[in-house]
Image (cartoon, rainbow, N blue to C red; front, side, top):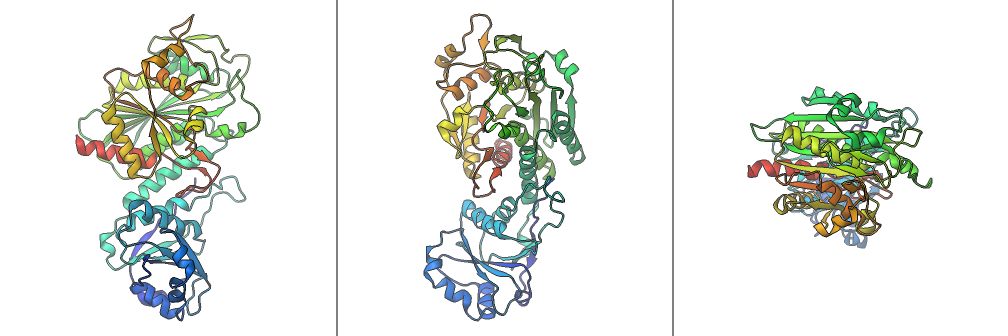
Length: 488
């Protein structure tokens, strides 16, 4: 598994700047004011830093960006990275600046000199999250020598990076799961990796196919019956709170989605290794909560299946009875994620009676058409709960946009032979998927459905991630957990 850079904090030693190897990143305010460390660098580099700060190149830099002065005279460093950032920079800009540092850091490591910047922890998180590469199946495997990044400040006792470390490990866990090929991350291996989280204090239970059959999870089992990989449900419990009911996080974990009998086109099907992205986010959140010993009760439940076509696969037109008892006419076997979630949502409520529930799924291509890769689609039956999540997502810089719901969409799911169909027409595809899921949510349960098809994996880099898996949602849900506890 990929290990994140773990920045450490040290007392500022001006004399050590000259001999620091690797890279030296120094923060300079947009006004060009040189702090104590920057002045020492300027002296060592014979005025090179001041000349750059007075140049048009520095003027044209956006806040949070960095530029290199390579192989500076008078210093052992391979480069001075000049990062433009104000002392009172926002969380977003502090993380962006950290990401600029993390993106450029090499095996030789880096000395980071933030000066008087107030949000050092956020800068450190940016460093950790951006420096990511999934290399498990390249050459000798994942990198063994993690770069050392030291953040030197005048009052190191005021900076605590323990939470930052827990968050970055959770995000990296999610990214690795999403990037893993499905011949490696089959249903059994996925469950085993989640079971290993017991070492952090989580209670982890794996429900096998016989257990799922006994529970009546027939819509979930219908998805995986064409695969040789057994379907599973994994229940992860973090009991860090008092006696309050838990927040339930539910994730779609389709380790590979061919579409089943309603098979997908060949072009781009290789990306369907990421169709377990919702379950990956749930796993990353649970790992972060355990690592930071969150004072909260949270249960994460993921349905893990593989959607394959064979002689035993579910056919279009089949009717299946859910755990709830409702019957579903399966019109399209490629609309399988909602069948997995239907049973797991009902199970979560039936067993845990959660105070609220969030499900995550790479559910529809339609949400990408509507929102692109900047925002996840947010659907909810409860305005205050939805607003709390949107606030958390905004604070963490994770794009989320609320989508409409309504009873009028239900007629698109009307079946002539069962209680409902699993798909409607092309129109409002992501909304009808949410309406389908809502039928498995009890009226008294505040609920959010997050369609993350557009944000779980991207073809271009984002501010805090290289191209590929983003780990979107780990930060926002972690914050939501804390916000809900403050209000309790």
